[in-house]
Image (spheres, rainbow, N blue to C red):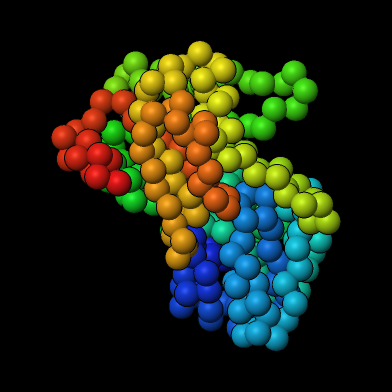
Length: 248
């Protein structure tokens, strides 16, 4: 059996009771960090409570899950995911693999940055358009499609949640996280005015959460501290949204 456990956005206290029970019943515990960094206290707590060493999987091991699937045929396997268990397409593909191999599975959901960022900024979910993801540039590779999404949402009067790239494919290499300042620079370089106002959120759901609202050009010079960071480009604001942002 495979259980995908959403860890939520905070530390060990964010794990649901269903998640705690599933961990206690697991024979092997795996986790990945290429979709989001895991809270440092969470792994220690899991190790202490389960008396098992969580195993760090690379992106390739999750996207080509032969090891997980083979183990799940005979054992109870837990895969820990920061945020919600199915916010990444990769994890849906795991369920498809289970179906194909007739392996029982369950999903334990939790809070996701996809919904929480809007809330902590006082923004209404139904005012958002499609999500955009900015990627860290590699050489001359600077895709413009995320910026096009932002522009289209602004034209339609919708806010844009902008997720920021993480390079953490291999467990043995130090992860690289895009910061809100880097994202602001990239958006300005792509042609959006530095005068537009944007909101940023760092470490959402953690005890040192930080939110900010101001001009894009000012964000490009701002250090919001440790990642992960997220960005929202607001468009047409409801008066309650504007009042909340102005008082961050």
